[in-house]
Length: 168
Image: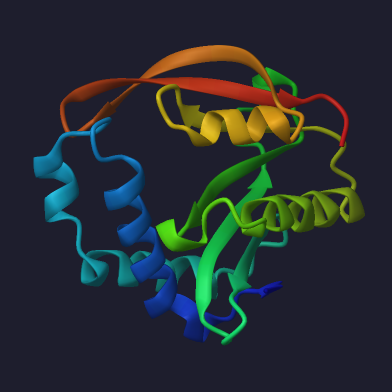
């Protein structure tokens, strides 16, 4: 497996990983009707926009399996809610189901943390659905639960946990 910075041409595969991982990860937490209507095509335009941004405070890294196929991604940057007192935020971390539990997530998080450190960020935060098994992954990676909030996803209230790393 390897990690590299995402390129603009990755947008179709990132859209695919994004949608497939939502459908497998959030099944049972988010309404099936919402998950079933998600399409790769609907995410492609968003990924084109994200990967064409020239934002110096936004990083996207992909993991590739042994055959060079993209198996997951992480995206993060400057923390979006400055009043919370953290420098950086993991915006998204998604892996195809068959690549979960194989070290890809840990390597992606550590790569993003290194980018944060190199750019002067000393702390970070992530929001994760409280019922998401990945919550335990973040805790094992050193994140501490510090807050909760309710999020509305297609009319359904879901609870999110905020996890923080006070020092990277």
